[in-house]
Amino acid sequence: MGKSTASANLKRIVQGGTSFRILDLYSIHRRFRHKSDHGNLPFFYNRRLNTAFLIKHTARKHERPYLVTDNPVVTKVIVPVTTSDLAMGGHSFFVEERGFEPKLREFIGQDSNELAYSHDLERLRDLAALPSFDPFLLSNRFRDHDSPVADLYFNISDQDLEKMEGYVADQVADMVNLAFNKVDVSPDDDGARQRAIRFAHYILTGEEDERFDQLQHALDLDESKYRAAIFGWKGILYYRWRISDEKDALRRFLIAINDLVVTGMTQSERFMIDEIRRDIISETRKRWRSLQTIMAEYETEYGRFATGGDPRAIRHILLKAPEFFAELGHDLSAVSHVTTYWDYWCGRREEETMPARDAMDIFPGFLRSLTSDRGPDEANAQSA
Image 1 (cartoon, rainbow, N blue to C red):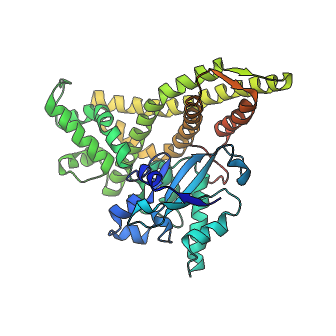
Image 2 (tube, rainbow, N blue to C red):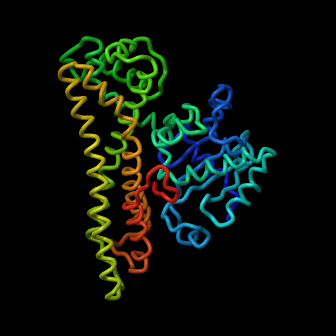
Image 3 (cartoon, helix red, strand yellow):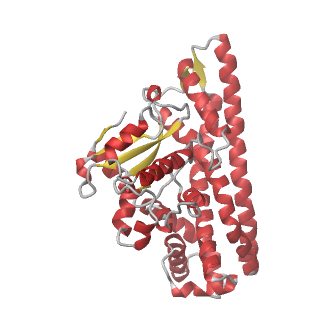
């Protein structure tokens, strides 16, 4: 099923790093290729694979006969013809397609080191098992792996950073004001806003800023634990932003699927479709409640810090944050898959109806996404 990919498509998927759906190894290579960690702790040993694009792709109906899974989302690999010019296009294939291994050898070439090739093959399967490529799920899975990956691969994409910075600045403004011993600051204070934006940039990029060194002392953490705490905080803020962004789409989805008129059903299809529809709504709400429960714990601890200035309150939740990543990532991936695909499907139609044949095709995939355990070691876990 491997095929050439148009250059325009390659240019559109350049993210500048890691996003929820796209692992842009091409941009990471261009930015960090001179750093030792990029070469010493890569995602893939094969140089062509380590400059590829990996995409969580919702399988279309015409693609499913070629796949060895019935999961609704598969992992697409696009290997550029050359990294010096994306206009040359690339070759693409799915990790879950029939005959995947021969195509992999054909497109990237067989390394003389068979152990390296086996490593890369297993790494592709590990990535396919994850529900998304959000950087905190990747870190949770591969940072302390037997074959670890450098932290530089877990950076948030440039596009997401740009969207997040203002949002994060609003979220951390209280902490920044406390750090600078300023209370009751007006929200219109330009100086306070700029400090919050600088601090947001510091959290999201990890760039050094000596003005915030005092935070490490306030949290009473050594260097390694402090960096882990900042990474944990970045993860919580990332998920908080994505949950906020997802909320409206989820509301639209629940209303639309509840009100959807399915046409042309037989009696047996009516019973099955109505039952699956109820389960989809129920499971979506369960996933959302799980997300809200974890974020409520953060809100409680951060509120204690913001109102009382006690660094122990925020210290506890930041050190605990990495434990949340897998659960948050899997729940958010499941919700995001159904809302994203629903918007895609509805965008192609004007009527608020669906033929029974489409419902019988789409609804079971939604339910599989929402009910799968999707732990990081579950080989067949899929979503996006």
